[in-house]
Image (cartoon, rainbow, N blue to C red; front, side):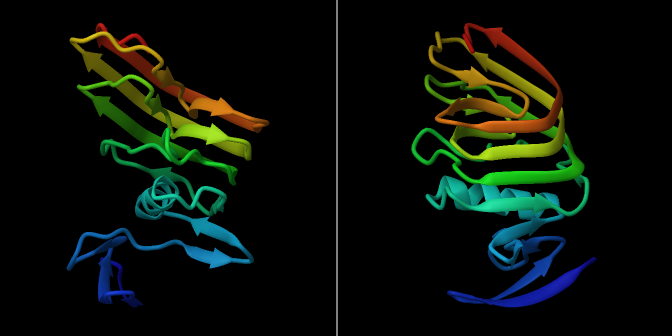
Length: 173
């Protein structure tokens, strides 16, 4: 197991495989020349958490293929905090992305990136599954393997998706 300690705002964190053993926080990705270096699923989850908390204009490069191990993925960007930065996959792939939502809701974006406003994605392949179910009607839901919904000028270059998307019930997405 990879272990690393770091001083956080609230004290010392002991990271094992990307997670703090004391508080379950994700290990922050390393920042190099203004770009986050993402090489693990935990670092990608930290990146999503950071964007979803309001730091939307950040950028990342993948330094390795990332296996999300079919854990229920929380997309990068949401309706309140749309991702506006960039991701360069450097020809790596994110595999085993899984989104299982039994309460698909109106106005929600589902994909590796849930909502994007401007920015760019390049040199990336995403593989996985998105299963959405709901007994109530859902409108204005957005689903895509890489990006669920986007606005503004978004640039995609050399981006591929092999994601099975299933809707069950009245989930109109």
